[in-house]
Image 1 (cartoon, rainbow, N blue to C red):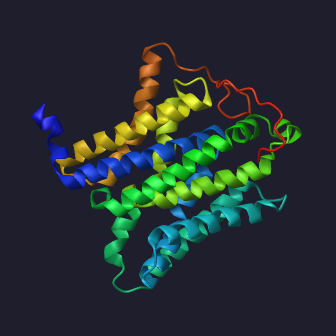
Image 2: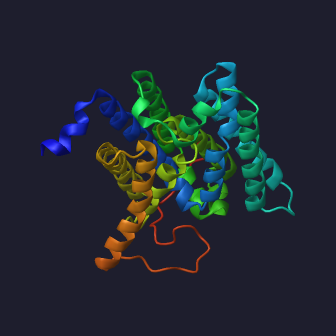
Length: 297
């Protein structure tokens, strides 16, 4: 048992567990809607689109999280603007912004002397360097994300499964979509320091996807996905401690593998969900009753 708890004897590992767990929880909550609504490509683009803002903030001596948030918001706004053209699909807009933001980030980094040393940390994160201030920021962001997810839960649910019905109930699906984009922005901007811009997508998508194999409701996906995310953080840190691997990358790999382990376990248990030709996202989820609530967003 001592070898199991040995990594926790180091204070920096304790902070990494706390910070990583906080990021895993609010990423799983936001990621649930990303998975259910089929927005994974957008989430990936926003995660990669952080680099220009991070690079500029670093060069100017500003706050990296604010720079990342501005960059992610610019990516989301650009996708929305391009998608207004009826001849261009949203996927095309996302792909264009993906290339633009990532290219800008690389150009800024390559043109800035002395920044290359920090590039690895920016791309892959440094969870073992998480400090008390970072934990406070993650806790604050998590509180905002969880509160917003609770307030807009009915609007998100209605918009995810039937936007026409959501509009008829006064739940304003477009406003709900905007709020969801803001939550994704907050999640990826706050958690990039834990696993990096290239790997934050793992915490955002993998745990909810693994939970979706078993869950029958959106709330269950959030709770189970959060638990899987926290377990991935702890397991990833434990493995990296003894294997000498990069902690952030190991966490992201464990999170991604959790889906396959979940799918295999469900298949063995005979609980794998049947595939469906329905165009609606996650067709096996039970939709929750949504009453008319004109005051909701």
